[in-house]
Length: 280
Image (cartoon, rainbow, N blue to C red; front, side, top):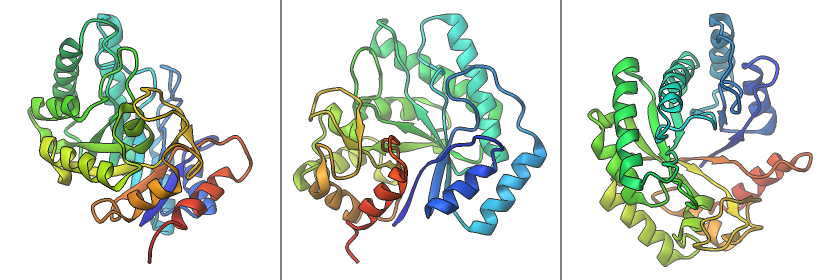
């Protein structure tokens, strides 16, 4: 089992590799720039090369780049929609410079225009993006907890998007455990976990599941609330995560923790907690 966390890129982006190594990560996730700002400086070739050099030396992988929060490929506001597409293209190019294997994407928010409207906007945007980037990495659509007008809270919607894009070999799924639980998928029980994975296989194809965002949930089942918790301390709990970690379909996949970072060494504690659940 490969386990890692989302690490900071503060200072120089290649420092993220050192942070991941110091935490004892097997894999790690980053933002390639500030996730809450449109403005960004160019990723210098020398910095990207140093990132790849340090990563090769540590043998940590895969590397995952996460999309910034501001991007919304379902936006009904044309200026924001076009800006999101442009930023998305730039972020894919940055991820490719870093030789990242995966690019995790939030689905989007239709802002009251309707789910079918939002999904059609996303498909149109992704077709344009793929046409302009032809990436080597996999773009992974991340399921959401739902709530409001956010898309991606069920696997039917994600399947529609993947099947709707022209070159869907570029796409896959990132399964977030806290989001799935909040959306109503009872992965804390064996029956619920098996049913969830069966549904993914039927709708999307289990071979397109490449990554797990392993987060416990502060919010109850079917709450449609996105609140992450430390491993084993939330509603999914130790029993639930023992099932997830040791499930034959999931055990081989990389696990990225996006658990709270309110205390010193909290990442190390969560890495230890999830590794302790693995049955040797």
